[in-house]
Length: 322
Ligand SMILES: [Zn+2]
Figure 1: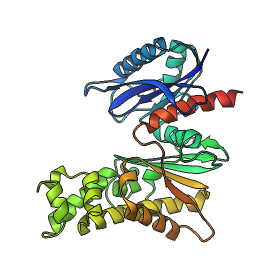
Figure 2: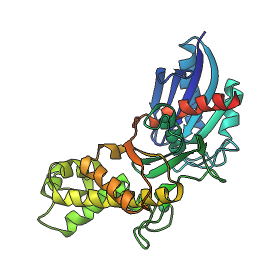
Figure 3: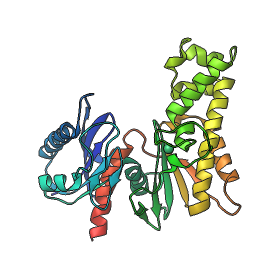
């Protein structure tokens, strides 16, 4: 009989579950459901339980463990969700205990960036690494560490928050309340905000970008900026390069402190093109001392990174119990 692991992703816009065989980087089956705008903690949990039981009843085998990726801060030691930025009802929720009671197997829960790091370390672009920094750049910027062959979460489960390193004192306001954080200068929405500001200030430039958003800068996305940059739009190229420089600066700080073997970049940024990547690598090198060498590589998993992270968490939970 197969030994099964269940991975659960409580994401910002959807909930998803996947079933995998223990130790195999391939899932047997998965289910997902887009969240309704009125969803709360209880409805998210009900959805996930329904999807999970449906999945488990469709496959024979013994469930060994569950890994959970949560799109928000998690207290790893206590197995509780601190809060959700997307939905009500999650504050201090004992999710680990709740799922252990429901399924009667060990459960490990972590935030999506740490789960992403563990997923890449187990199955993806960070496999065989003794130390790595995983960074995901999408609507926000998150990060997670593997150090000395183990996930490192810090004293308050807050390690790896590279999105909130200050890279421009007195810079733009960040969602966290501070100013000049990396996230406020280099995440997807920051890239589109910057492009809009420049289009409005520099008439006559950004022709390709203006065409892509059909003359309405309010419709601009970071993807359009990448696309315009790759098609030779100078304004878009400058916006993207500036974001890449800030990301490289943030990475340089992390390299200086921790000297990891590899940096894995995930999220929508993977599609930003060669010039963007070259600038991230150049700026990271410029802002770290001589003698530090690191590979900065694209993540293996993009869209389903949290779910793979959840499966890897379940794997790690079992191997740390052996
Ligand atoms: Zn911040």
